[in-house]
Amino acid sequence: MITGTIYNAGKMLEMTQKWEQKKSSGNILNKEELSPEEQQLKMYQEQLEREREGNEYSSIYAKIQSGQELSPAEEDKLRAKDPKMYMEYKADRMEQEAYEKKLKNCKTKEEAERLHVNRMNGKLSELKSIVNNPNIPKSEKLKVAQRILGDTTKTAQIFHTFTKSAEFKKLPTEEPVNAESANETEGGNTMKDI
Image (cartoon, rainbow, N blue to C red; front, top):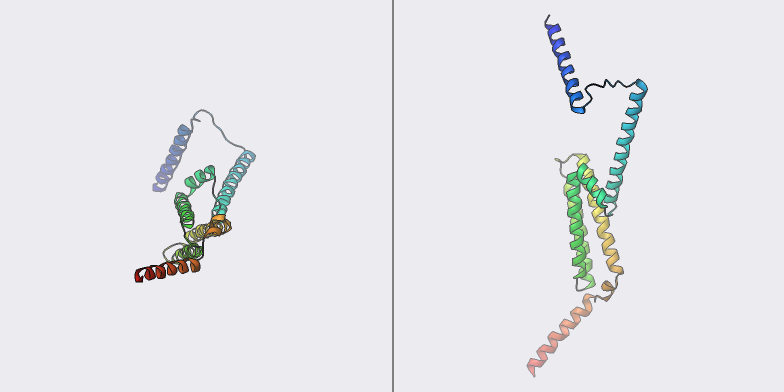
């Protein structure tokens, strides 16, 4: 007798849920039962949609990993699917812009090279701290490592482009700059002695 009561309560709950679904969908009067073929077709369509969406996100993550910029539409999709990755992507873009400005403000070729090496070492340290952290799940480590790889790739591209620019070619090396400053200092001392 108790079993029957539990069964009836379960059936009542199931019917209530179906009624709520019909009310929320607005399909109260139409009794839409799909044939097995229609159900299978609907299932295939849903699966294709999930695969297409998955491919879009895969291409977005691949662009991030390769250091490419995302289009505004891709940024919107990333923000909707993975807000944390979106924020990290935007932060990396801002860092890259600051890095470009710092490169342009360098006074010597060696200073630009030191800046580049320091940035690359910073990315390596960031990667090591993520990989060695046992509290981060492997799937999250992979995402972060891919983001760091993309940022590192973009950093290398920025530096390569800068070294090919006329701006970089005009920069002096430190040897002549040091020699000039030494000559100025020696010249200044001789002037005082006279």
